[in-house]
Image (tube, rainbow, N blue to C red; front, side):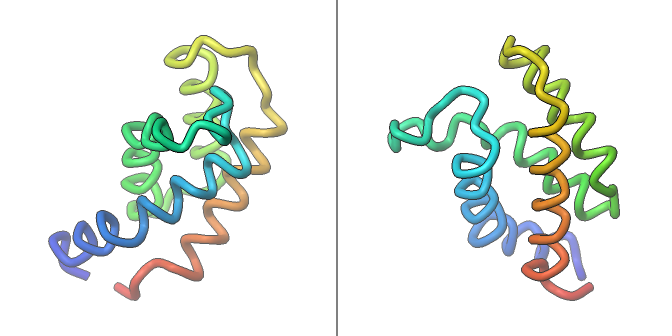
Length: 100
């Protein structure tokens, strides 16, 4: 798939869907009950999207999420939560991403 077509899918469908997944299943900042701040993870989720597009698997994504959690968001580590969410994200992408 051409980069422009993937980017269009990502902006219209991928990122909004992944944002909901993140808020419902990862959410280290606890924004679930604060809808106006639902976009708070978008910067990090954009990188997850690029990782998925390049074929990165759950281990790489979980490591990245762990760094986001501990370094960028200054939260306590939660490797299990990061791993479980990374598995969910990779499975979601396999089903939802447009074909190459």
